[in-house]
Amino acid sequence: MQPKYQLNKTTHLVTPVRRADAITLEVDGHRLDVRLHWHDGHHGELTLNGAPYEFYAAQDGNKLFIHFGGRVWQLGVIDEFGDAGEGGAAGGRVRAPMPGVVVEVYVVEGDSVAEGDSVMLIESMKLQTEIKASLPGTVKAVGAEPGASFDKGDLLIDIDAGERRE
Image (tube, rainbow, N blue to C red; front, side, top):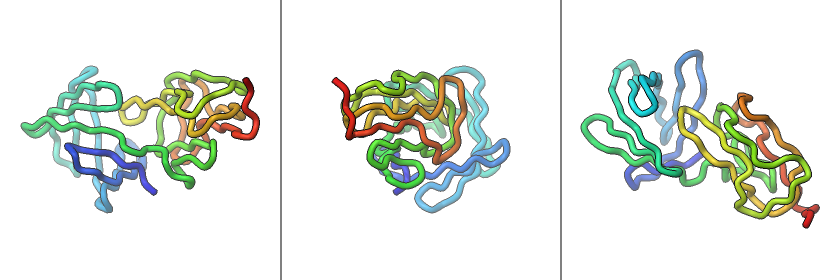
C-alpha cells in the first residue's frame, strides 16, 4: 500500500523517491520530476518536469492549502503510515514512508502510550506530519532524535503491545 493523499476531494497514491537535488514523485503510477525552492515560509517556486510555477502555501493542521496555477488546492493526508511493508506500520512498528527529518520526539523508550497518541513530529518536503501510536503499549525503540534525517523505510517508532505500563 502506498501513502494516500487527497487533493481537492480526489484521492491519489503517491510514492516520493529522492534523486540528487530533485525529487521524483510517482502519483497514481505517473512519474513527475519535482524541484522545490522556497523564497520564504509561504512562497516558493515549484518546477514540474522542467516547467517552473510560482506558488503560495499555508498549513492548517494536516491540511496544506496551495495557491498554484490560478487555483487554490487543498492537500490532505489520508493514510501516510498504514502499510505493514516499507513505509508503514506493522503492529507497533512505524516506518518512514519517505525521506525526511525528525522535528520533535514526544516519547522515550519505556513510555506507555495509547493508540492515537502523538509520538513524533517529522518534516518531509516542507510538510510537517505528526506520527501517532498505531496501538496501545510500551515504546520499545525510538528510531531517530530531533534534527536527524531518515530514509524511506527507516524505523521511526517501535511499540510493543504486549507490555503496556500503567
